[in-house]
Image (tube, rainbow, N blue to C red; front, side, top):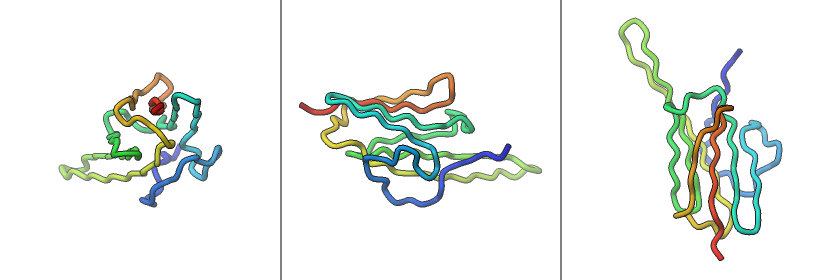
Amino acid sequence: MKRRYFNLDHSVIDYPYKTNNDDGFVKSVCFDDRFILTFNCQNVNAKEMKVNIIGNQVRIEIIKKDKNKGHLFSKSSYKIYKLPDNVDSRSIKYTFNDHGDLIITGEKES
């Protein structure tokens, strides 16, 4: 099975995201007081990911390292997603579930 990683298009992906976007990677649910983003990361080890919250954006980076015949190879790719409006950036949390999903949650400002 071929592993799928991020497309190397580094432009910011605006919210609201398409329900079934081109890469089939993200699902979002927005409530009056909070939001939940779920990223399909089944083919990526959690140790290979970096998640950074920068203002109203989340930057998700995958860093793959491999050793071959004594040489170390490294490649990385990332995407930047704009968060929903009125998000309290101090409330943002993320975790990985047992299904390999990255789940980002946060509260909206009153």
